[in-house]
View: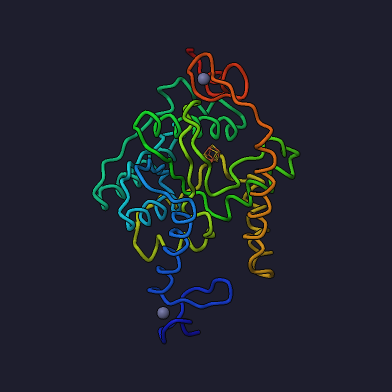
Length: 283
Ligand code: Q46
Ligand code: ZN
Ligand code: ZN
């Protein structure tokens, strides 16, 4: 198959067009640019690097657009896995000429290994620490490497588990609310699928950890994601339509949410004490 834009051999197909390596990179960066332009992203961005392919691709793409970037990594303290992730995030920063700031979850008295089902604890802690880091470092935004596949899988999982009122993270951009110390959140690779992020990382030879978190093994969300990708192959554009639908639902629900300030830490909370402070041993 030939590239839609030139005569070279195509390496990937997206939405009915085939792309050679060069034009695939342009397609990828174009999708990132569309988020930047749509939400008028300007200013300092804290970039969360998990060590995985998606956040590596996200950081590399943002760096191409010459933003003022502050990369950071949250070391989750998960045996054999977290240190490997940190090493890969450090390698990427060295390659692109940045210093990596590292936050250790352990320093907050939280040990994920103690929980039978650590993922929701992990999610709460990551969301809290990302925002705190960006806020304390005067960043206007925090950027994460959530892609289209992740967003739709996460939303579908919320639907499946009946967690619809906790519906969030479906939009590529969430405004700041500085009264509650909430920094704006942006997902620059929102319009790109898992496979496309992997391809971008491979073409650019970006360091990333290939290992999955041990807690992700056998997670129903992995099977759900595989199923969604199979459906996407049969119905191209399905993931994007689903993401847009979830995005609209979230906008409707958000209007009804009341925020408070956590009485312990002063950051945003739905109750008197935020979930993160409840998790911490010493507060
Ligand atoms: S939530 Fe769960 Fe992931 Fe945290 S404990 Fe591992 S699998 S890393 S995205
Ligand atoms: Zn081409
Ligand atoms: Zn708190």
